Structures are given as C-alpha cells and as structure tokens.
Image 1 (cartoon, rainbow, N blue to C red):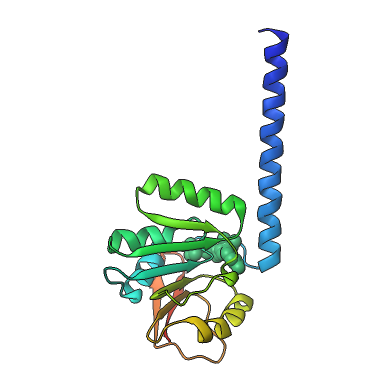
Image 2: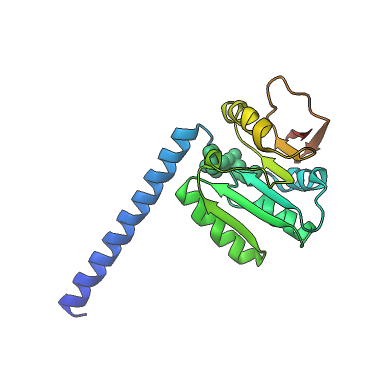
Length: 184
Ligand SMILES: C[S@@+](CC[C@H](N)C(=O)[O-])C[C@H]1O[C@@H](n2cnc3c(N)ncnc32)[C@H](O)[C@@H]1O
C-alpha cells in the first residue's frame, strides 16, 4: 500500500473516531441537560400504550423524547393512516432512531429537537416515557396547548396532582410496569 493511501486511511479513521466522540459527548450533554436518559419501552408495554391511545385515521400522535422511535413505529403498524411525529434531543439516540425507522419502512418523522420548544396543539395523542421532573414541567404546557379530549399515555411516570382516567399494569416477563392514560 502506498504511503499516501496509508496516511489517508489513518486520517479517515481518526476523523471517524473524533466524530463518534463528539456524537457521544453531545448525547451525554443532552441527557444531563434534561435529566432523562435513554431507555426503551419494552414491546408489551408499547403495545398497551398504542392500544390505550385509541388512534384513528388522520390523527396525529407525538412522542416526547421519542428515543429510537419504537413507539411511533408500533403505532404506525397498528394504524397506518396516522401521522407519527417524534422529538429526540440526544444526537446519538436520534441517529439510532433514524436508522431504526428507515429499517422499519414506516413513515415516521423523528425530529432532532427539544420537545419543550414545540407546540403540541395539533396532537391528538401523546406518548411519554420521561422522568418526574419533565412530567412536572410538561403539565402547564399541556394545559395551555393540548386540545380538549387529547390522550396522553405515559409509561411509568404520573403527572403530579392529576388523576389518570385509566391505569394499566403490563408484565414484561421480568417486571410489571404501569401505564397511565390521561385525557385533557
Ligand atoms: C426513557 S427514553 C424513552 C424513549 C421512547 N419514548 C420509548 O419509550 O422507548 C426518554 C428519551 O427522551 C429524550 N428526551 C428527554 N428530554 C427531552 C426533550 N426535552 N426533548 C426531546 N427529547 C428529550 C431523552 O434523550 C431520551 O432518549
């Protein structure tokens, strides 16, 4: 191999490693800023959430902190004529999500954005799997923006001082997880 090619390959590998480090650092930073690390909803829980959301053709479902997009992919598979939009602010997780959506062949939009800066007035249903702090901060936002009758389905975490209309327990095989349905 020529010396020039060797040098080029070394620079390319170094650039790739640097890029991966930057993506990793940005992902960690995003997780620290929102205090909500990535964790995927198990399939059985996701199915229960999709069922509770009662999605109909033409409706819009949003996942706040969509992770790898799995809930939206499951929702699209259950009801193909919905609009599925997710918000993920951690670059590395978002990249994995884009690949997963591509692989699934489903038409799901996954935006690299801080969901708190988006207006949810067009959402008919919202999926959540975020920590208590984020739940608390989303409550006044939802009161301002969500349309009457919108469904919010939350995995594991409740809104403080707000009574869910339904609580379901779902076994994942290893654990029993709770899913809360709220109606605005
Ligand atoms: C526990 S994971 C849930 C992923 C997915 N919803 C699921 O149930 O499989 C929470 C995700 O929310 C993202 N997140 C937290 N705060 C966010 C915000 N303000 N805007 C967008 N994404 C956020 C985190 O980066 C993380 O990937």
